[in-house]
Image (cartoon, rainbow, N blue to C red; front, side, top):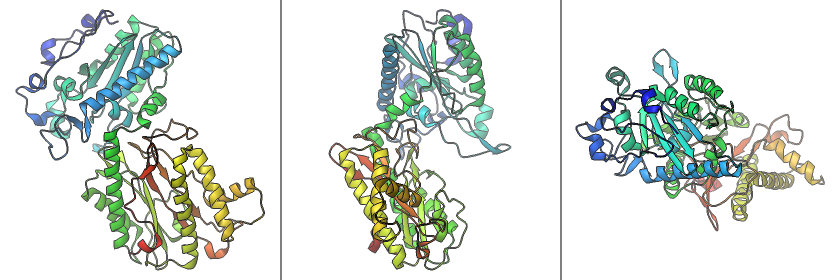
Length: 500
Protein backbone atom coordinates (compact mmCIF):
# COMPACT_ATOMS: atom_id res chain seq x y z
CA UNK A 1 0.00 0.00 0.00
CA UNK A 2 2.79 2.46 0.89
CA UNK A 3 5.89 0.75 -0.48
CA UNK A 4 8.02 3.85 -0.94
CA UNK A 5 6.80 6.07 1.89
CA UNK A 6 9.94 5.63 3.96
CA UNK A 7 12.15 7.09 1.25
CA UNK A 8 9.69 9.75 0.09
CA UNK A 9 9.21 11.21 3.54
CA UNK A 10 12.81 10.61 4.67
CA UNK A 11 11.77 10.15 8.27
CA UNK A 12 14.42 10.25 10.96
CA UNK A 13 13.36 7.88 13.74
CA UNK A 14 15.47 9.76 16.26
CA UNK A 15 13.57 12.94 15.49
CA UNK A 16 10.39 11.41 16.85
CA UNK A 17 11.86 9.84 19.97
CA UNK A 18 9.82 6.81 20.89
CA UNK A 19 7.37 7.16 17.99
CA UNK A 20 7.59 4.25 15.56
CA UNK A 21 8.54 4.91 11.97
CA UNK A 22 5.32 5.31 9.97
CA UNK A 23 5.99 2.66 7.36
CA UNK A 24 3.24 0.80 5.59
CA UNK A 25 3.21 -1.89 2.98
CA UNK A 26 0.52 -3.84 1.15
CA UNK A 27 1.48 -6.99 3.05
CA UNK A 28 2.00 -5.69 6.56
CA UNK A 29 0.63 -2.98 8.78
CA UNK A 30 2.99 -2.02 11.56
CA UNK A 31 1.23 -1.42 14.85
CA UNK A 32 2.51 0.65 17.74
CA UNK A 33 2.93 -1.19 21.03
CA UNK A 34 4.37 1.68 23.01
CA UNK A 35 3.57 1.75 26.68
CA UNK A 36 2.65 4.89 28.53
CA UNK A 37 5.82 4.55 30.52
CA UNK A 38 7.98 4.46 27.39
CA UNK A 39 6.15 7.39 25.83
CA UNK A 40 6.29 9.68 28.86
CA UNK A 41 9.65 8.73 30.33
CA UNK A 42 11.52 11.87 31.30
CA UNK A 43 8.73 14.14 30.11
CA UNK A 44 6.90 16.52 32.45
CA UNK A 45 3.19 15.59 32.47
CA UNK A 46 2.08 19.16 31.76
CA UNK A 47 3.46 19.09 28.21
CA UNK A 48 0.16 17.66 26.89
CA UNK A 49 -2.06 19.93 24.85
CA UNK A 50 -5.18 19.07 26.85
CA UNK A 51 -6.08 17.93 30.38
CA UNK A 52 -5.01 14.46 31.52
CA UNK A 53 -5.68 12.40 34.63
CA UNK A 54 -2.27 13.50 35.92
CA UNK A 55 -2.64 17.23 35.39
CA UNK A 56 -6.42 17.51 35.94
CA UNK A 57 -7.52 14.65 38.23
CA UNK A 58 -10.62 16.68 39.18
CA UNK A 59 -11.80 16.40 35.56
CA UNK A 60 -10.36 13.19 34.14
CA UNK A 61 -10.05 9.72 35.65
CA UNK A 62 -7.30 7.23 34.94
CA UNK A 63 -7.96 5.59 31.56
CA UNK A 64 -9.97 8.51 30.19
CA UNK A 65 -8.90 10.68 27.27
CA UNK A 66 -11.72 13.19 27.73
CA UNK A 67 -13.86 13.66 30.85
CA UNK A 68 -16.14 10.64 30.98
CA UNK A 69 -14.74 9.18 27.73
CA UNK A 70 -12.24 6.34 27.98
CA UNK A 71 -9.64 5.29 25.43
CA UNK A 72 -11.58 2.06 24.93
CA UNK A 73 -14.69 4.09 24.08
CA UNK A 74 -12.75 5.97 21.40
CA UNK A 75 -11.44 2.71 19.96
CA UNK A 76 -14.98 1.30 19.80
CA UNK A 77 -16.08 4.35 17.85
CA UNK A 78 -13.23 3.95 15.39
CA UNK A 79 -14.01 0.27 14.96
CA UNK A 80 -17.61 1.20 14.08
CA UNK A 81 -16.31 3.65 11.48
CA UNK A 82 -14.08 0.99 9.91
CA UNK A 83 -17.05 -1.38 9.82
CA UNK A 84 -19.29 1.29 8.29
CA UNK A 85 -16.77 2.22 5.59
CA UNK A 86 -16.16 -1.46 4.79
CA UNK A 87 -19.89 -2.23 4.56
CA UNK A 88 -20.42 0.74 2.25
CA UNK A 89 -17.53 -0.37 0.00
CA UNK A 90 -18.76 -3.98 -0.04
CA UNK A 91 -22.30 -2.91 -0.88
CA UNK A 92 -20.97 -1.11 -3.93
CA UNK A 93 -18.67 -4.05 -4.74
CA UNK A 94 -15.66 -1.76 -4.40
CA UNK A 95 -12.33 -3.29 -3.38
CA UNK A 96 -10.35 -0.10 -3.66
CA UNK A 97 -8.43 1.57 -0.88
CA UNK A 98 -10.58 3.85 1.31
CA UNK A 99 -9.03 6.99 2.82
CA UNK A 100 -11.07 8.96 5.36
CA UNK A 101 -9.80 12.44 6.26
CA UNK A 102 -11.29 14.11 9.35
CA UNK A 103 -9.85 17.56 10.12
CA UNK A 104 -9.88 19.34 13.46
CA UNK A 105 -11.08 22.92 13.68
CA UNK A 106 -8.68 25.79 13.25
CA UNK A 107 -8.41 28.69 15.65
CA UNK A 108 -10.53 31.61 14.42
CA UNK A 109 -9.52 35.17 15.23
CA UNK A 110 -11.86 38.07 16.00
CA UNK A 111 -8.99 40.50 15.33
CA UNK A 112 -5.23 40.39 15.04
CA UNK A 113 -3.92 37.76 17.49
CA UNK A 114 -7.17 37.81 19.51
CA UNK A 115 -8.89 34.44 19.11
CA UNK A 116 -12.48 33.45 19.61
CA UNK A 117 -13.05 30.69 22.17
CA UNK A 118 -11.92 27.50 20.46
CA UNK A 119 -14.48 24.76 19.88
CA UNK A 120 -13.38 21.51 18.30
CA UNK A 121 -15.00 20.00 15.21
CA UNK A 122 -17.30 17.48 16.87
CA UNK A 123 -16.83 14.75 14.24
CA UNK A 124 -13.07 14.95 14.75
CA UNK A 125 -13.40 15.04 18.56
CA UNK A 126 -15.79 12.10 18.56
CA UNK A 127 -13.35 9.77 16.80
CA UNK A 128 -9.98 11.15 17.97
CA UNK A 129 -10.43 12.51 21.49
CA UNK A 130 -7.98 15.26 20.54
CA UNK A 131 -8.86 18.83 21.51
CA UNK A 132 -6.00 20.56 19.69
CA UNK A 133 -6.58 22.76 16.63
CA UNK A 134 -5.29 22.04 13.11
CA UNK A 135 -4.90 18.30 13.72
CA UNK A 136 -6.04 15.66 11.22
CA UNK A 137 -7.24 12.09 11.70
CA UNK A 138 -6.81 9.73 8.74
CA UNK A 139 -8.29 6.25 8.39
CA UNK A 140 -6.85 4.03 5.69
CA UNK A 141 -8.79 0.90 4.94
CA UNK A 142 -8.43 -1.83 2.31
CA UNK A 143 -10.02 -5.27 2.52
CA UNK A 144 -9.36 -6.51 6.07
CA UNK A 145 -6.54 -4.07 6.90
CA UNK A 146 -7.06 -0.66 8.44
CA UNK A 147 -5.10 1.89 10.41
CA UNK A 148 -5.53 5.30 11.99
CA UNK A 149 -2.91 8.02 11.74
CA UNK A 150 -3.19 11.21 13.77
CA UNK A 151 -1.42 14.31 12.49
CA UNK A 152 -0.68 16.83 15.23
CA UNK A 153 1.25 20.04 15.57
CA UNK A 154 4.87 19.36 16.54
CA UNK A 155 6.34 20.71 19.75
CA UNK A 156 7.38 24.33 19.35
CA UNK A 157 8.91 26.22 22.27
CA UNK A 158 8.05 29.69 20.97
CA UNK A 159 4.42 28.87 20.09
CA UNK A 160 3.88 27.08 23.37
CA UNK A 161 5.16 30.11 25.27
CA UNK A 162 2.27 32.14 23.83
CA UNK A 163 -0.51 29.60 23.31
CA UNK A 164 0.18 26.82 25.80
CA UNK A 165 1.57 23.29 25.57
CA UNK A 166 1.12 20.87 22.68
CA UNK A 167 0.91 17.11 23.02
CA UNK A 168 3.34 16.62 20.15
CA UNK A 169 4.03 13.59 17.99
CA UNK A 170 5.96 11.60 20.60
CA UNK A 171 3.04 11.28 23.03
CA UNK A 172 0.10 11.28 20.62
CA UNK A 173 -0.07 7.53 19.88
CA UNK A 174 -0.23 6.54 23.51
CA UNK A 175 -2.52 9.35 24.54
CA UNK A 176 -5.09 8.97 21.76
CA UNK A 177 -4.67 5.29 20.94
CA UNK A 178 -4.10 5.66 17.20
CA UNK A 179 -1.78 3.38 15.23
CA UNK A 180 0.55 6.20 14.19
CA UNK A 181 1.17 9.86 14.84
CA UNK A 182 2.96 12.27 12.52
CA UNK A 183 3.47 16.05 12.35
CA UNK A 184 0.84 17.98 10.38
CA UNK A 185 3.61 19.27 8.13
CA UNK A 186 3.92 15.75 6.68
CA UNK A 187 0.23 15.29 5.85
CA UNK A 188 0.34 16.48 2.25
CA UNK A 189 3.29 14.26 1.35
CA UNK A 190 1.73 11.35 3.23
CA UNK A 191 -1.55 11.55 1.32
CA UNK A 192 0.16 12.21 -2.00
CA UNK A 193 2.10 8.99 -1.59
CA UNK A 194 -1.06 7.02 -0.79
CA UNK A 195 -2.87 8.32 -3.84
CA UNK A 196 0.07 7.91 -6.21
CA UNK A 197 0.44 4.28 -5.21
CA UNK A 198 -3.28 3.59 -5.71
CA UNK A 199 -4.98 6.12 -7.97
CA UNK A 200 -8.26 4.24 -7.64
CA UNK A 201 -8.44 5.20 -3.93
CA UNK A 202 -11.73 6.59 -2.61
CA UNK A 203 -11.09 9.72 -0.54
CA UNK A 204 -13.79 10.41 2.05
CA UNK A 205 -13.80 14.05 3.11
CA UNK A 206 -16.53 16.54 4.05
CA UNK A 207 -15.89 19.21 1.43
CA UNK A 208 -19.15 21.06 2.13
CA UNK A 209 -18.43 22.22 5.70
CA UNK A 210 -14.87 23.53 5.56
CA UNK A 211 -13.11 23.65 8.93
CA UNK A 212 -9.50 24.05 7.76
CA UNK A 213 -9.39 26.31 4.66
CA UNK A 214 -5.69 25.70 3.89
CA UNK A 215 -6.10 21.93 4.22
CA UNK A 216 -9.20 22.10 2.04
CA UNK A 217 -7.27 23.73 -0.80
CA UNK A 218 -4.55 21.07 -0.57
CA UNK A 219 -7.10 18.27 -0.66
CA UNK A 220 -8.84 19.79 -3.67
CA UNK A 221 -5.51 19.63 -5.48
CA UNK A 222 -4.70 16.11 -4.28
CA UNK A 223 -8.04 14.67 -5.36
CA UNK A 224 -7.10 15.47 -8.94
CA UNK A 225 -4.41 12.79 -8.70
CA UNK A 226 -7.05 10.08 -8.27
CA UNK A 227 -9.04 8.39 -10.98
CA UNK A 228 -12.27 9.52 -9.27
CA UNK A 229 -11.43 13.23 -8.88
CA UNK A 230 -14.33 13.75 -6.47
CA UNK A 231 -14.70 13.33 -2.73
CA UNK A 232 -17.09 10.91 -1.06
CA UNK A 233 -18.79 12.63 1.87
CA UNK A 234 -18.47 10.64 5.12
CA UNK A 235 -20.81 12.93 7.06
CA UNK A 236 -23.86 10.67 7.06
CA UNK A 237 -21.71 7.71 8.15
CA UNK A 238 -20.32 9.76 11.03
CA UNK A 239 -23.78 10.83 12.10
CA UNK A 240 -25.27 7.36 11.89
CA UNK A 241 -22.65 6.28 14.43
CA UNK A 242 -23.11 9.37 16.60
CA UNK A 243 -26.92 9.17 16.59
CA UNK A 244 -27.17 6.38 19.18
CA UNK A 245 -25.54 7.47 22.43
CA UNK A 246 -23.35 5.13 24.46
CA UNK A 247 -23.76 4.75 28.22
CA UNK A 248 -20.96 7.21 28.95
CA UNK A 249 -22.43 9.77 26.55
CA UNK A 250 -25.82 9.44 28.24
CA UNK A 251 -24.17 10.11 31.62
CA UNK A 252 -22.57 13.29 30.24
CA UNK A 253 -25.89 14.36 28.74
CA UNK A 254 -27.66 13.80 32.06
CA UNK A 255 -25.12 16.06 33.73
CA UNK A 256 -25.38 18.74 31.04
CA UNK A 257 -29.18 18.74 31.28
CA UNK A 258 -29.03 18.75 35.09
CA UNK A 259 -26.71 21.76 35.17
CA UNK A 260 -28.82 23.77 32.73
CA UNK A 261 -31.99 22.88 34.65
CA UNK A 262 -30.56 24.13 37.94
CA UNK A 263 -29.24 27.28 36.29
CA UNK A 264 -32.63 28.14 34.78
CA UNK A 265 -34.35 27.51 38.12
CA UNK A 266 -32.00 30.00 39.80
CA UNK A 267 -32.55 32.46 36.98
CA UNK A 268 -36.33 32.25 37.36
CA UNK A 269 -36.00 32.72 41.11
CA UNK A 270 -33.86 35.83 40.69
CA UNK A 271 -36.05 37.47 38.04
CA UNK A 272 -38.23 40.49 38.74
CA UNK A 273 -39.87 43.34 36.83
CA UNK A 274 -37.62 46.07 35.38
CA UNK A 275 -34.66 43.72 35.05
CA UNK A 276 -33.04 43.66 31.63
CA UNK A 277 -32.93 40.61 29.41
CA UNK A 278 -29.16 40.97 29.52
CA UNK A 279 -29.14 40.49 33.29
CA UNK A 280 -31.05 37.21 32.98
CA UNK A 281 -28.63 36.15 30.22
CA UNK A 282 -25.73 36.85 32.58
CA UNK A 283 -27.42 34.96 35.40
CA UNK A 284 -28.01 31.74 33.47
CA UNK A 285 -24.49 31.92 32.00
CA UNK A 286 -22.95 32.40 35.44
CA UNK A 287 -24.96 29.65 37.08
CA UNK A 288 -24.10 27.14 34.33
CA UNK A 289 -20.39 27.87 34.62
CA UNK A 290 -20.43 27.75 38.42
CA UNK A 291 -22.03 24.31 38.22
CA UNK A 292 -19.26 22.98 35.95
CA UNK A 293 -20.29 23.79 32.37
CA UNK A 294 -17.62 25.18 30.08
CA UNK A 295 -19.94 27.71 28.50
CA UNK A 296 -23.45 28.08 27.12
CA UNK A 297 -24.19 25.74 24.23
CA UNK A 298 -25.50 28.56 22.02
CA UNK A 299 -26.45 32.26 22.25
CA UNK A 300 -29.54 32.08 24.46
CA UNK A 301 -32.94 33.55 23.74
CA UNK A 302 -33.95 35.81 26.63
CA UNK A 303 -37.10 37.43 25.35
CA UNK A 304 -39.42 39.60 27.39
CA UNK A 305 -42.92 40.48 26.23
CA UNK A 306 -43.47 40.66 22.47
CA UNK A 307 -39.80 39.84 21.80
CA UNK A 308 -40.79 36.22 22.45
CA UNK A 309 -42.65 36.16 19.14
CA UNK A 310 -39.27 36.42 17.38
CA UNK A 311 -38.24 32.76 17.47
CA UNK A 312 -34.48 33.33 17.25
CA UNK A 313 -34.39 36.55 19.26
CA UNK A 314 -30.88 36.94 20.74
CA UNK A 315 -30.46 40.72 21.10
CA UNK A 316 -31.32 40.34 24.81
CA UNK A 317 -31.14 44.09 25.45
CA UNK A 318 -34.66 45.15 26.48
CA UNK A 319 -36.15 45.94 29.89
CA UNK A 320 -38.74 43.39 31.04
CA UNK A 321 -41.88 45.18 32.21
CA UNK A 322 -44.25 44.22 34.99
CA UNK A 323 -46.84 41.84 33.50
CA UNK A 324 -44.56 40.51 30.75
CA UNK A 325 -43.73 36.88 30.13
CA UNK A 326 -40.09 35.88 29.76
CA UNK A 327 -39.17 33.17 27.26
CA UNK A 328 -35.70 31.76 27.92
CA UNK A 329 -34.15 29.19 25.56
CA UNK A 330 -30.76 28.22 26.99
CA UNK A 331 -28.50 25.24 27.47
CA UNK A 332 -24.91 24.54 28.36
CA UNK A 333 -22.01 22.52 27.03
CA UNK A 334 -20.59 20.08 29.57
CA UNK A 335 -17.40 18.30 28.49
CA UNK A 336 -18.50 18.40 24.87
CA UNK A 337 -22.21 17.56 25.33
CA UNK A 338 -25.04 20.07 24.95
CA UNK A 339 -28.37 20.64 26.66
CA UNK A 340 -31.25 22.69 25.23
CA UNK A 341 -34.12 23.90 27.42
CA UNK A 342 -36.88 26.47 27.04
CA UNK A 343 -39.02 27.82 29.85
CA UNK A 344 -41.57 30.64 29.82
CA UNK A 345 -42.66 32.40 33.00
CA UNK A 346 -44.35 35.63 34.19
CA UNK A 347 -41.73 38.11 35.41
CA UNK A 348 -43.96 39.13 38.33
CA UNK A 349 -44.95 35.57 39.22
CA UNK A 350 -48.58 35.76 38.08
CA UNK A 351 -50.04 34.81 34.69
CA UNK A 352 -52.75 36.99 33.17
CA UNK A 353 -55.82 35.02 32.01
CA UNK A 354 -54.68 35.19 28.37
CA UNK A 355 -51.12 34.14 29.24
CA UNK A 356 -52.34 31.27 31.39
CA UNK A 357 -54.73 29.81 28.82
CA UNK A 358 -52.08 29.74 26.10
CA UNK A 359 -49.42 28.43 28.49
CA UNK A 360 -51.65 25.54 29.52
CA UNK A 361 -52.32 24.73 25.86
CA UNK A 362 -48.58 24.47 25.14
CA UNK A 363 -47.91 22.46 28.31
CA UNK A 364 -50.73 20.03 27.59
CA UNK A 365 -49.55 19.51 24.01
CA UNK A 366 -45.96 18.95 25.16
CA UNK A 367 -46.94 16.36 27.76
CA UNK A 368 -49.07 14.54 25.19
CA UNK A 369 -46.16 14.48 22.71
CA UNK A 370 -43.71 13.12 25.29
CA UNK A 371 -46.19 10.39 26.22
CA UNK A 372 -46.60 9.45 22.54
CA UNK A 373 -42.85 8.78 22.20
CA UNK A 374 -43.58 5.26 23.47
CA UNK A 375 -44.89 4.53 19.97
CA UNK A 376 -41.46 5.40 18.51
CA UNK A 377 -42.70 7.88 15.88
CA UNK A 378 -40.41 9.79 13.56
CA UNK A 379 -39.69 13.40 14.47
CA UNK A 380 -41.66 14.48 11.41
CA UNK A 381 -44.65 12.46 12.61
CA UNK A 382 -44.29 14.06 16.03
CA UNK A 383 -44.41 17.47 14.33
CA UNK A 384 -47.60 16.60 12.46
CA UNK A 385 -49.08 15.28 15.71
CA UNK A 386 -48.16 18.57 17.40
CA UNK A 387 -49.88 20.63 14.72
CA UNK A 388 -53.03 18.53 15.06
CA UNK A 389 -53.08 18.73 18.87
CA UNK A 390 -52.25 22.42 18.89
CA UNK A 391 -54.91 23.14 16.29
CA UNK A 392 -57.59 21.33 18.27
CA UNK A 393 -56.68 23.10 21.51
CA UNK A 394 -56.58 26.50 19.81
CA UNK A 395 -60.02 25.81 18.41
CA UNK A 396 -61.22 25.26 21.98
CA UNK A 397 -59.95 28.68 23.08
CA UNK A 398 -61.21 30.46 19.98
CA UNK A 399 -57.95 31.17 18.18
CA UNK A 400 -58.72 28.90 15.22
CA UNK A 401 -62.14 28.60 13.59
CA UNK A 402 -64.11 25.42 14.12
CA UNK A 403 -65.65 23.35 11.32
CA UNK A 404 -62.58 23.38 9.06
CA UNK A 405 -61.05 20.29 7.50
CA UNK A 406 -57.88 18.67 8.82
CA UNK A 407 -55.53 20.17 6.25
CA UNK A 408 -56.74 23.68 7.05
CA UNK A 409 -56.48 22.90 10.76
CA UNK A 410 -52.84 21.83 10.38
CA UNK A 411 -52.05 24.91 8.30
CA UNK A 412 -53.73 27.17 10.85
CA UNK A 413 -51.77 25.62 13.72
CA UNK A 414 -48.58 26.18 11.74
CA UNK A 415 -49.26 29.92 11.68
CA UNK A 416 -48.98 29.85 15.48
CA UNK A 417 -45.97 27.50 15.64
CA UNK A 418 -43.86 27.80 12.47
CA UNK A 419 -40.93 25.70 13.70
CA UNK A 420 -40.33 21.96 14.00
CA UNK A 421 -41.18 20.38 17.33
CA UNK A 422 -38.01 18.29 17.68
CA UNK A 423 -34.38 17.78 16.72
CA UNK A 424 -31.61 15.38 17.66
CA UNK A 425 -29.37 16.45 20.55
CA UNK A 426 -25.85 15.48 21.62
CA UNK A 427 -22.41 16.95 21.09
CA UNK A 428 -24.04 19.61 18.91
CA UNK A 429 -27.29 21.36 19.77
CA UNK A 430 -28.78 20.42 16.41
CA UNK A 431 -26.92 17.13 16.47
CA UNK A 432 -26.33 14.74 13.57
CA UNK A 433 -28.02 17.06 11.09
CA UNK A 434 -27.45 14.63 8.21
CA UNK A 435 -29.91 12.17 9.78
CA UNK A 436 -33.41 12.59 8.39
CA UNK A 437 -36.22 13.47 10.76
CA UNK A 438 -38.41 11.04 8.83
CA UNK A 439 -36.88 7.91 10.43
CA UNK A 440 -38.48 6.33 13.48
CA UNK A 441 -36.80 7.13 16.78
CA UNK A 442 -35.05 4.32 18.62
CA UNK A 443 -33.51 3.54 21.97
CA UNK A 444 -30.36 5.53 22.67
CA UNK A 445 -31.38 8.66 20.79
CA UNK A 446 -31.72 11.98 22.62
CA UNK A 447 -34.19 14.47 21.21
CA UNK A 448 -35.97 17.70 22.14
CA UNK A 449 -39.72 18.22 22.40
CA UNK A 450 -40.54 21.92 22.04
CA UNK A 451 -44.03 23.07 21.03
CA UNK A 452 -44.78 26.78 21.08
CA UNK A 453 -47.34 29.46 20.34
CA UNK A 454 -46.38 32.86 18.91
CA UNK A 455 -49.23 35.30 18.37
CA UNK A 456 -48.51 37.90 15.71
CA UNK A 457 -50.84 40.85 15.12
CA UNK A 458 -50.73 39.76 11.47
CA UNK A 459 -52.38 36.43 12.29
CA UNK A 460 -55.93 36.74 10.96
CA UNK A 461 -57.32 34.26 13.50
CA UNK A 462 -55.92 35.85 16.68
CA UNK A 463 -57.90 38.10 18.97
CA UNK A 464 -56.07 41.32 19.88
CA UNK A 465 -56.11 40.21 23.53
CA UNK A 466 -53.44 37.64 22.67
CA UNK A 467 -51.26 39.75 20.38
CA UNK A 468 -47.57 39.77 21.26
CA UNK A 469 -47.63 36.63 23.40
CA UNK A 470 -44.88 34.07 22.81
CA UNK A 471 -44.67 30.79 24.74
CA UNK A 472 -42.45 27.74 24.27
CA UNK A 473 -41.70 24.77 26.54
CA UNK A 474 -38.78 22.53 25.65
CA UNK A 475 -37.37 19.42 27.31
CA UNK A 476 -34.57 17.02 26.40
CA UNK A 477 -35.66 13.39 26.22
CA UNK A 478 -33.69 10.14 26.15
CA UNK A 479 -35.47 7.40 24.18
CA UNK A 480 -35.38 4.02 25.92
CA UNK A 481 -36.68 0.57 25.01
CA UNK A 482 -40.02 0.81 26.76
CA UNK A 483 -40.41 4.46 27.67
CA UNK A 484 -38.53 7.74 27.66
CA UNK A 485 -36.52 9.64 30.26
CA UNK A 486 -36.93 13.41 30.55
CA UNK A 487 -33.36 14.53 31.22
CA UNK A 488 -34.55 18.04 32.09
CA UNK A 489 -37.27 16.92 34.50
CA UNK A 490 -35.80 18.99 37.35
CA UNK A 491 -36.54 22.22 35.51
CA UNK A 492 -40.10 23.14 36.63
CA UNK A 493 -42.81 23.92 34.08
CA UNK A 494 -46.11 23.63 35.96
CA UNK A 495 -47.99 26.92 36.39
CA UNK A 496 -47.80 26.77 40.18
CA UNK A 497 -44.02 26.27 40.10
CA UNK A 498 -43.17 29.26 37.90
CA UNK A 499 -42.92 31.93 40.56
CA UNK A 500 -39.81 34.12 40.99
